[in-house]
Image (cartoon, rainbow, N blue to C red; front, side, top):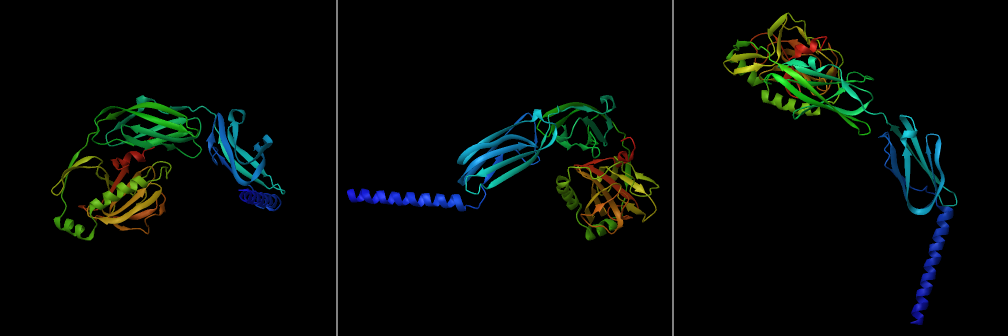
Length: 401
């Protein structure tokens, strides 16, 4: 037993000597800076009231001191830590500083002979301004015909994180009317089939620190008088188009997928323009059309007349997302203007030098007017969709929209 005790004692002394030796070695020769981590304060994040964050460390060598600066003001100077593992809470009273950008700097000093230092610098923003918002137009002016678009506008007193308009189960993103503006807007499609009468909606606005405000609104759907029309297309032409074109269902499936990927921002500014030098309208929006092949259906687009093979151009800025030929729409170009708002141009004779993914500006050519697809003569089918819902494009060309 005595021999065993002596053995264990010597073994322990050896371990102590090794440990001390390693500690001495680390004290004099450690070259790595200490590791520290800051949680609770995100880079470029927004904060209000008392903001709490935590500095933590987990090192082989002890952290001797921690110092903290907010902008040019020192919050703590050489706060003594003296541990390998630690958690140091930092509280920032944002009500004592101005709104806008600030910088927090945290510096830790190691306990080795060389006193290595490491720093974390975080830029963040303070927002203690109370969120306020109000509609631009009185409710008495919120009237829209069946098949048209409700233009919702409201003003906010500061930049916000998100704003949406909710009509029933449908949600529409609101965006700034223009850069540096405080007016936000959203575009709500009204179906041709919507019943006339009052409709309620809400605007939900969230600022960058999570405060929320809700505006309650109403608009009135007015009955539109849709005309009727008969159309006859040569059966041989229909068969030819089916042979050389993709199925029209392919286009609808692609549009559904692309609507989900549409940017949550406006890619245009200003009103829309007619996409060609039009000489008249062959078919107005919403006309109830009757054909031998399709029966009775609503024509939710404008059919514009012009000289055959006239140049067709983009009615507004956007991105080309479809360029192909389909059985009904013929040579087709679709432009994404952002916010799920699409321009569809049908029956083109041919295409201009454009490709899918190209950014396109208002007035840039997309092709020439033709009669490909399900068409009885030369014309341009101009269609607009908001999240897949067809709306009257003519309304978008008005100065007062």
